Image 1 (cartoon, rainbow, N blue to C red):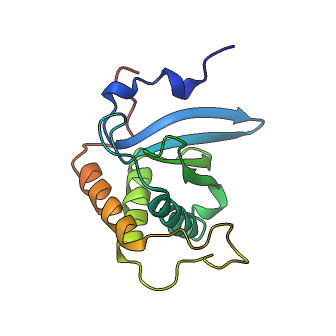
Image 2 (image 1 turned 180 degrees about the vertical axis):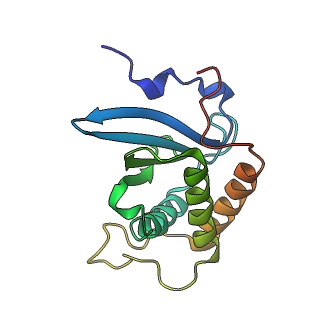
Length: 159
């Protein structure tokens, strides 16, 4: 079988960052997959499920309410390896817009207080598994990392 594209990325030399992972055409629409790599694979601890779950709820809520972009959000969710998230958008957006979008989403999560959206037994399949304080710590660390990067989204190293 043919190896899927994400398995061709060298995960031994992949720092945290924002990457344009792939572009897929579906008729007249192009779906862009962004790799929001929050931790360095195989070198740093993976994210715990409670923090991932909280980031997913808050990130998806933020993205699907973002004026001028919400109509393009296809999916926001965690990677199986628990080192970050995938953001799929219909249509391509310029790198500066993507950088600002991710930055704004992280700032929203860091500043968030109150009840996590969709956090009840009737709205979520595992509503008790959340950790807002740790989600904020992870988002702060990731925001600090991407603020150091000159230009986003980035091509994968050795792409």
